[in-house]
Length: 90
Image 1 (cartoon, helix red, strand yellow):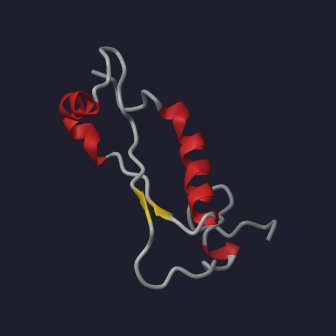
Image 2 (cartoon, rainbow, N blue to C red):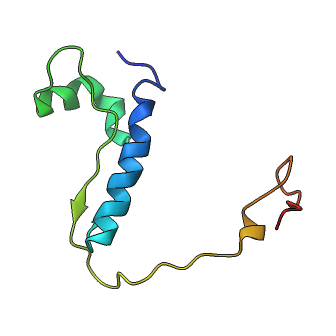
């Protein structure tokens, strides 16, 4: 049974797939909820022994509003040295 950080090298590629789907007008989200049922899910996918799934990306056409995303100011999410301490580089 794979450990919690097993497969973590896939996440940069997963992020790129999320960005690419967005650029195509599709919606997606990363989910790892299935890992709590790893053996069962791997069997459903028909994965061979020793191969495991670490992320699932449901991809589809979004319903409703799917416009441009907004971003808040960096000062609200970037800190220096510790949580809540303003970063002086902003």
